[in-house]
Length: 287
Image (tube, rainbow, N blue to C red; front, side):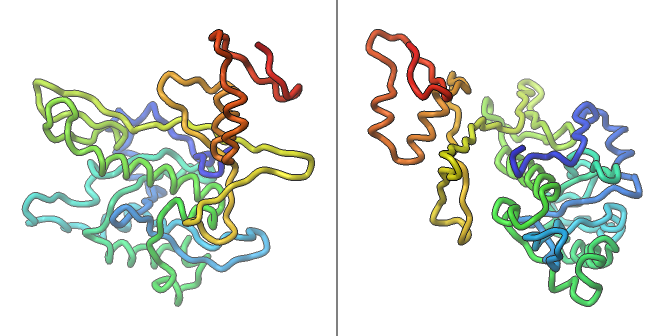
């Protein structure tokens, strides 16, 4: 299971188009909000303990009913803007597995101070940080960078929220007619506002293959110079248009990432056009 996979939630995708069901979920006393500021996640620095080694951060989750009550009226009278926590601005991520709480995400830059105050009052956050240190512990972080320092379930939720909100920020106009688009379906669809066009758009997916190459007790890993110190990854490659997830493509991407260009040349399909397949167990080609 990939580290950033949303494994600790029921996505409940069948409810996204059901306005009444999502509205009811947003009014649930257990509903939580994952706040973002200018695309960066609000997180809380937590004390490490023996049961969760390496976990230094947690999402700065806040009870939705608390933050909406605090932000009541924010945005009113500001020309061209709406309430940043209005129901239409919330993106539904699903139901958290551990307690069934509905999970939402939203950009809260315009009411950041109110959200921070609500986070500092959240008993779930206080229990992990301590009442006196909460305000100083709340920081903004890039979701991808901070993920490895979170628990797997927290990193999965935060990654899902970050990617959805990023797509929304980048999808503002219709690609067919240039008209503005409206985000609908609980944040998971954009639709052209022009009544003659109404073109639909959905979150962009970029299929990729992640491969762990091993030799005995050793594994082939790589790193980017911009990554945190000591951070390594398996080798990966994106799947191009009309390209399959076949092992042949996977192997070539691994060799490219590892800089083994001579091996790539040796593995290219023969001139007669027959596409070979790679059998990992036998380590040889079968035309």
